[in-house]
Image 1 (tube, helix red, strand yellow):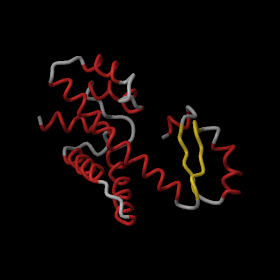
Image 2: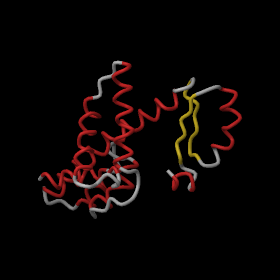
Image 3: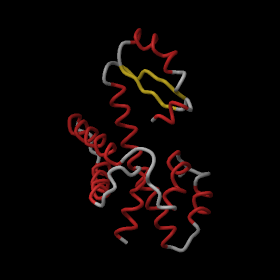
Length: 166
């Protein structure tokens, strides 16, 4: 988003004509950590779909881990401090676990936008014959968040859903 561009840490995935990409790449590199042409027209959008699919699953897993830690009487901060250094570590864990524990979701990428993106992903999955049962399930969990008034909340609010149903 905007903060990523301002801090030059965006991941840019492109599709289209190679010559056009090569002309635009120096400008994109100003505000990106990585800029890559994936293939022909449409390849960038499909790569963005892969990103959203992965984030949806990551956030549900992170939400469940933090929820379990709380219910088990563990210090959520200590748990994440340890597990973030291993295979479970991710940008979402590093940047969202504290706000999740603080029940603060008024920042970041909105649930409404994620649901729009996941609808596109699921439709594209149907088109190409890709089964995505976890993505479909997490999309419904985001619908639950919308139903409790959280459409503008950050996507890490999946944690709030778990707190609500427990």
